[in-house]
Length: 310
Image (cartoon, rainbow, N blue to C red):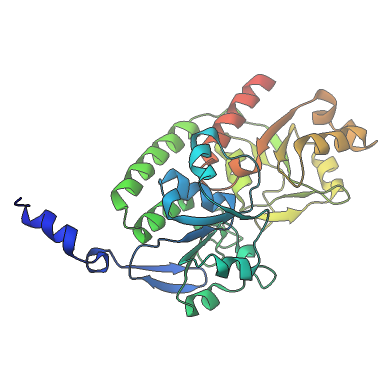
């Protein structure tokens, strides 16, 4: 059988000779991927969903740290990936999985209390990437990030794995969905308190976190937008003073929306807020508030709930 020359070369040349090399600068330093990773581990749901959206589940040997449910469109692919830990896996567990790439959604993954610095993994020949929105160097905590980090992550992962065309298609689709979702202005003229967690001191969102971008995308004003930082401790006195028009409840495994609503309704002072008295609550899963693959779903869900409030 006579094979075309190009096909014959592809069959007999070692993969290393035609795999693409990628130089990637993550928050923890530069790493050169001489070949696309084959044994990736994702350390947060946000990172996991970028991989699944790009159809890279077959390159994953582990995942960890769900914030809430994986959407049905990725459920089958997710089920094929071993779950290494409920939260961050121990360093020893990661090493036993023999990874060649670690992909995180939050800087806490590479803290000393978790897996350690990115540079330490580079020294072992293991590449890393921290999503763009979580990197203080590329997105300072005092500068609103917009939605560009979502597209940046898709581009970088596409480059690392040598699937640039697939990534370009997903970028175009995501950009189109973002543009369409941004046309919704259902929150125009209304102020919102974003309630993530906490009771004695509410944990909320400052100027520059993903949930702040989310509410502003539909025209809402975040009552804590004047505070620097992605996440902030917000005094209840400030919330009472602002008396927001509505309350955005972030639903997460560690702090459910139902628990937070019950706390507000039971507190003798907070229960008198106009939004609480009128039941003006909207609920968004945590994974739809971060600048990741579910962000557009969050924008659409928020717009729909605001319309229902009217």
